[in-house]
Image 1: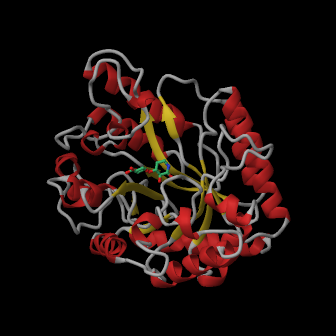
Image 2: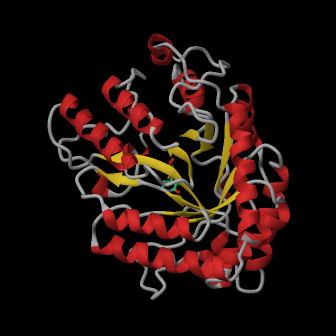
Length: 376
Ligand code: XIL
């Protein structure tokens, strides 16, 4: 794939979003209460033609009071939290279950939202239990290729972008290349990444093909290493003409860990120089260590959103920002098993832009909305 092809695909991505991106002139009362499912105005989306502002949601959240209205009123992109992962789509080695994935696509279509597919391949333990007994060196490549082919063809024309490989690099990897150890590395080796991208390009060349990366945003030695390993991987894939088109920066941030600042901006610039698109794919803020009253905490989290996003000013290849946790009511950190995510005071997390009762946190909302306007 050459640079012109990448740009052409990127423009195609941009022009499809223009369809969904109407002028955000929703009055504040309307945005607070949602403005009705089905309205085309997307209040958080900046007034420019080539930009997505998305949210993550599952079928559960989208059938609870007020959540679907808020999602539909504010965002022009929807990504499913779990409905398109292997665990959902592949109950057994030989079967596919698209019921919930189709439900998400249908919700998006009814509400003038595009769909970002998440994800086609991930080394995490969040894979079907049958991987342990079935996946091996002789069939790994076939399983991966068949899955990507079948899933992308099923959702053809309905999904605008795919996280083709999720979290390729992790800070805790003991491998020198930093790759996430797990079933795909065991079965295929590091080439699982190029296998996945080739299969995706073959199955349906239209959706944007993303390498979705995490833990590269903060100023810690781990994340210094994560940025270096991620960049080395991205450059290698581009050099080997693997059909990757974009890098997703997950952006699961921590409110009390410093951002990497210039080191992060340099990292972004190097990605931009490879010609790839950049997306913020899973933005939320871990407030486990944030002290104070709910109002104090909201202020700190709101500022963390703002300051993080402000770093993307001038990054011309950025064309989407996706929020992972828009409401405190459905914060995945509250149910995550990791004991490090439990707050000392036993309180729930306050990561959302909307609170437990789906009421907008106005200061946070306004500062996010204004910084988004500067990004395109
Ligand atoms: C999370 C989901 O939001 C949760 O509902 C689920 O229990 C665990 O996974 N990086 C990713 C996402 O790429 O798929 C994860 O989503 C969050 C971390």
